[in-house]
Image 1 (cartoon, rainbow, N blue to C red):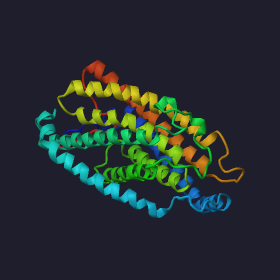
Image 2: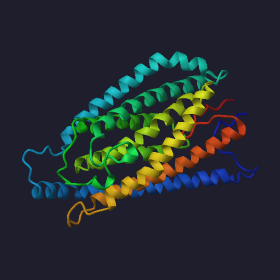
Image 3: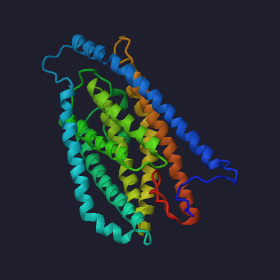
Length: 342
């Protein structure tokens, strides 16, 4: 007789009645699916409007020497995407043995290998986010729109000043499109990975992230976009470390990482992020009376992203409660599914 794998939903009784957990899970998946459909509809409308926005920008703000964004610039994204794949593989090669030795799973070899690879991948992500957080701060630290809440010298109210011909700080184009390459890598890695119980939420997260990256770059909303990228990278350092250590015997490292993630997640994504959404998308008419949908479209996507952050923050709190009650660490968004055994 086959045994249920970890995370598999079980019937409440012999007649197959669903448990409360199963019903909530199904409703959650359906909700995120509907959000995804709405996001797709909004994206189609934005694509239809894109040509008009670009024409308005270049006609009303004629700056011969200004380097307007272009589709051809995305070669930087492709280069960094390939580099991310290679760097990830190198990190895995050098850390696999270490994580294999400290993996919690000692009995099932397939599960042990799967969890070891997950720890290696997560370590790569944490290294990546540490480096790009430093990169982002060095790029934005003197800009008038990097707020004091993010250790800048300015205020978010200046985030749309001089739009659409904002002066780009040195290195912003490479920072913007380079970090986008990492997310392209992660989207394909997620799509090719075995489907788990959080597949829809994570896939939606990757799609929304890349849409925001590409769309905001093409209509030159890079000031707002770069601040949003920067504040997100903080918590991702600790999120990746938690995923790295949660399947290992290094409990202290897991606990310290979880504390760091809780604090940084709440501060940057629950507290600072909504202020950034307001000032970048809803505080003023950046199109000077032109009836375009672009800023409100990106504002809607950012609100979707904020909803995802709040949802995952509650998942985080639930996981912390589980640890304090049972003394067991738990992955916050992903679970390695064991194969069914006979």
